Length: 460
Ligand SMILES: [Zn+2]
Image (cartoon, rainbow, N blue to C red; front, side, top):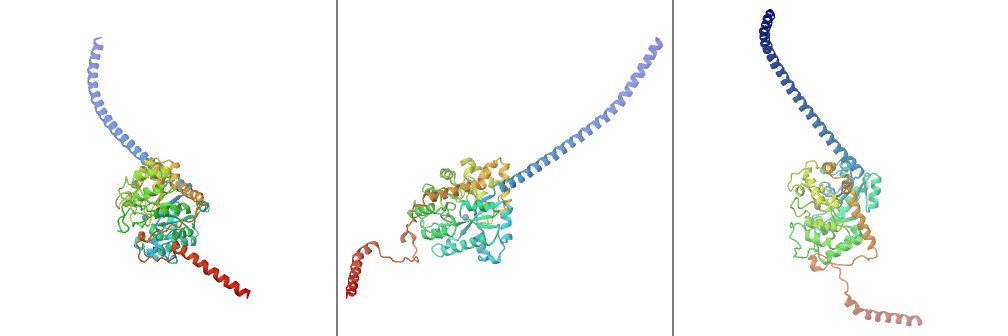
C-alpha cells in the first residue's frame, strides 16, 4: 500500500513532472500547432481570396462576353436603321465627289465605310445631302443636287449598297443582305423657298428633310444663332413654312426637326399630319445645348407618334469633346424614362463632327451602345424597337398619310418677294389676273375678226 502510495506518490510526482514536462512539450507543440494552424488559416484565407478573385474575374469575363455576344446576336436579328450620316459631305471635302478616286469599302478620311457599316450591323443608313448655310440665296439648290447625285451614285455603283425610297424597298434590301441608302436633305435652305424644288428632290429619291440647318430660312427658325439672317420675333413657322410641311405630308417625305428652334419644332408638331423625326438629336435634360430636345417637346413628340434618334456626337452627349459610351446611354435612359422606348431611335451623326465618344469612334462600334443598354437592363424587345422597328413604324405612317392625301393636287403656294429678301431672285413676269381679265374681251374680238375675215376670203 505504502509502496503503492510511494509508487503512486513517486508516480504522482513523476506524473506531475511528466505532466509538467509534457505540458511544456505540449505547449510548445501547441504553439507549433497554433503556428501551423495560423499558417494554415492564413493560407486558406489566401486560397479562398484567390479563388473568389478568380471566380469574380471569370464571372465578369463570362458576363461581359455574353453581353457582347447578346448585342451582336440582337443586332444580327434586328439590324440598325440609322437616322443621320454625313459621309457625302466628306466625299465633297476630300474628293470633290470623285468616286473614282475613292474606295468606299475601305475609306480613309472618314468614320464611315462599307466594311465598318457591316461590322456595325447597319442595315439602312439615311445619308445627308447637306450644303453649308453660306450657300443660302446663292447656289444651294445646285450643290444639293450634286450631293444627291453623289449619294445616288455611291448607292448604285457599290453592290453592297442599294438606294431605297420606301419601307417595302427597305425590307427587300434586308432580305437581299444589302445596306439600304435613304436620302435626306439637311437644311430647308436647300429648296430655296420653292415647293417645285422640294417636289423634284422627292422625285430624285429624297425621303426626309430637316427644315433648317444652322441658319434661319425665310420660313423657319434655326436652333443656332450662327448666321444673322431672317431674324424674326414670334413667327417661327410662317404661312409658307406651313405650306412646306403640308407638301411634305402630301408627298410622303419625313419632316426632320433636328437643327430647328424649339419654337419651330413646337409649331410643326402642332401642324404636321404625319409623325415627324429628330434624325440626330439627344436629350436637353442631360446636356444643355439648343440642338438637343427638352422634355416638354418630347411629350409633344410622343403625342405626334414621332421619333427622336439619339445623336452620339460628344458635345451633344457628354457636353464636351470627351465622352464615353455611358454618357450616350444616359440619354437613352432619360428619354425612355420620359416617353418610353417606342419613340427612340439612333442617329449617330458620324462624319458630321470630329469628337465621338470613346468606344463609339466610328460606325463599326454601334454594338457597344447596345451592349451598354443590355447591361442597364433594357429588354431585347425595347432594343429591337430602337434599332429599327420604331423607324419603320414612323416611315410607314408617313407613307399612309401620303396615301390619304393622294386626292390633293400639288401645292401652288409661293413665297412673296418681301419674305425672301433676295434681289438676285429672278421672277419671270406673267400677266396678272386683272390685266388678263381686261385683255380677254379684246383678245376674243381680235380672234372673232380674224375668223370672219378668213371665212369671207374662203367664200370668195
Ligand atoms: Zn446635323
